[in-house]
Length: 206
Image (tube, rainbow, N blue to C red; front, side, top):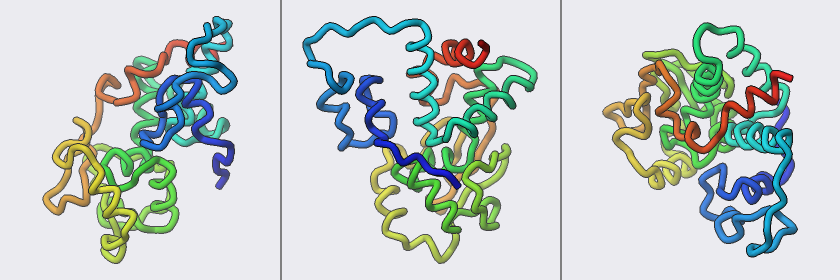
């Protein structure tokens, strides 16, 4: 499977915040584009430039390659209902995203690796496809022999809210698995208020 090999934090500086919740991200100290001074006046982007930036922000937030990201957009476009909500919900319900939201991984990239290495289960059965679309009622867990992994322990120690990471995930009694409860709109998704989805729709609708 193709992976993102370019510097992951370069676009964070253009966005003005870290896309990956990484405390070491350079955008924390330098929330301005590379090559700019903190007190310099930013050149206004063209409409296309603004659309492209929003698209790149969302794509990299979910750790996706362009081809896969666009296929997800096309799928959302064919669904009934609000296209923006459909798109966000499809991105959010990918297994690698929900593993990260549960706090089992420190980033979506770490979540992808956990899944491909066979450490993650769906309803007790091993699942090694990061893009798997999790369905309402399914339980995401960790394979029994993987629960002692240091990387999982470290991620769980750092998770901010062990009870309810997000409204659509319910942490189970064991504290290391969670049930996806389903979503009817995208308002509860953490990314929703930081991305201008309308500009991405415009970008792909040309």
